[in-house]
Length: 231
Image (tube, rainbow, N blue to C red; front, top):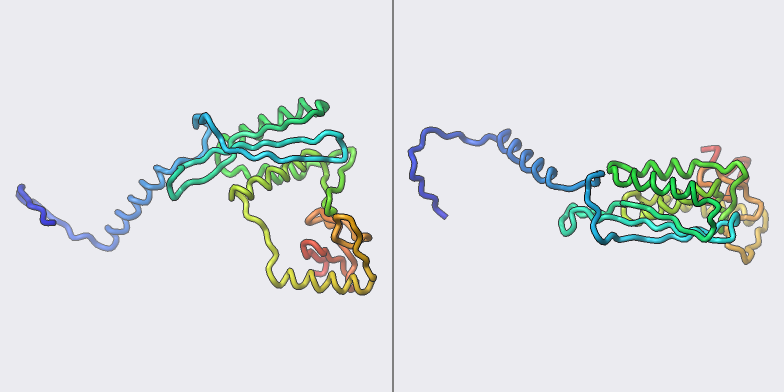
């Protein structure tokens, strides 16, 4: 399409490669500026998308139900993302009501503040109960109820894409499989009907908190995560 110039040309400039890069960078900056991120001044919409997680511990007769509601940012665009906005914990057991209510309000405030809230997971999972923890099905050790709440939040963050699932590579999987087979052959391990897929005499691994640590060739090796004291 031809463009007719009606005014007198008083000057011109040929765009160099540097000029083109500056124009491109400026355009990208304007696009990034239009992307909405989580911050405390965001207005809560009428409807949020949520997920509820059930926690049943041997320390209480009644289960806890953790509901995490998410806000969808930049909906319908290539920058669409789902971020946690608030958390609620409900249970018939009123023994922990006071601190659970305080904890949910603090966590919700951190969520709404914006930025990287993934640090909450490690902080919560590092809380130990002075009365002692407990083992979940599968042999995973849970040091406290707060830590299990942290695990539920971690599962939710992985579900919405905030955290990436750590997977063992093929070499690690083959190493664990060979070590496990060797151990079972030496000890003639017999599979039982329980949910624990690791040897009965396995010890607790300090890295993955699972009872899967066995002695192999004079070295303690975890059959769950592959951690070994011998490197």
